Image (cartoon, rainbow, N blue to C red; front, side, top):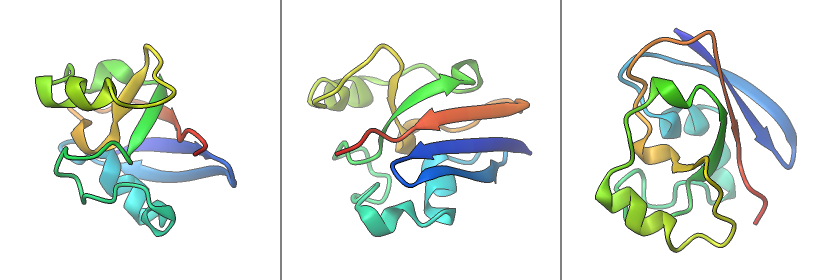
Length: 103
């Protein structure tokens, strides 16, 4: 089990992430979907679950072609931009930190 911190406009929110679980699932545990985060439910057809991975990127697989195509459409792309629906925890880590960009 890995601790995951989400930096949001409302402050830092914390939950856990299990190996094989998507970051999007952790976001839903915190109620981030109530603000429009992850609107497509994790189907890699929108970019509403765009995040910046500040710590722990090595615990996730590389970007897929589908994810890269969607990341090309985000307004505030950074080198550490990823889609939470595509981030499946591959290995446990002490802590993962992600930032949810402001809209």
